[in-house]
Length: 256
Ligand code: KIV
Image (cartoon, rainbow, N blue to C red; front, side, top):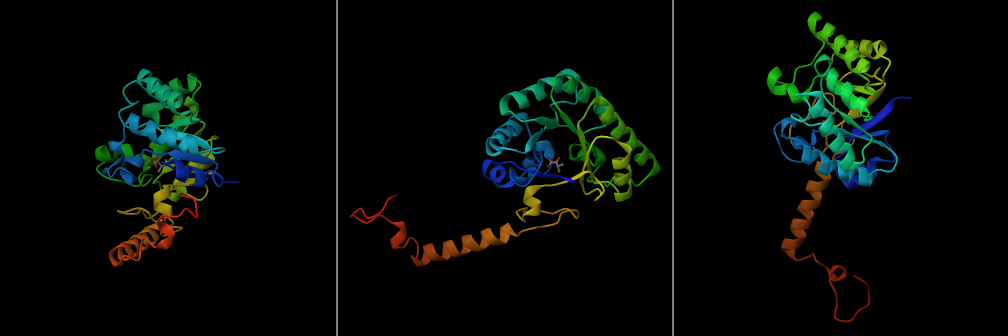
């Protein structure tokens, strides 16, 4: 059965999603979605740990994975291990995720050797958006397809327990899934992947800016919130709110 994954960044959302998903990812997308940064490069280790703590508090059964933010692991295996240890030690999450293939295999192997499970992330890597000159779909050229296979093999060999494939041509993501033994988790990839993930705010219609093509919106919470705010504003201005049920009379008939 496909592995069901969603991102989560807060305690109430983790509590709501936990019964329905196999895996909750505290993605570094939190920097964009909740903090208003332009890219995921705005995420810091402290930010990931704070949101990670909220999500682990709200989760009883799902596997919680926390993204390693840009700048916390690329320099060396030692740097990566120190950051991964901090994330797991301070949040109690089950695993970390980092972006990269062949170039990050040493980091994946070193973290795994510490007993910390690692999820890989290949294909479109949002932390490389500045280097790549934008969000570019992968798997469109022969060279890039070969690189994708090398990356998938490298993270598998380094000991990753699973790998996210993002923003990759469907047929290539399907082939990659058949090629590696570890489960692939697709986002803008293929229905053949072993699991799927979406950014929670995208799929519930909370995203303020651009929603990627690969997102299916299952709810329109922006509309619900805008409507509630508009009705509240109208009732405050007309003094319809607060009504008799929302204030405390001098004689105590009810509880606060
Ligand atoms: O940061 C994130 O939310 C992610 C997922 C989109 C896979 O890495």
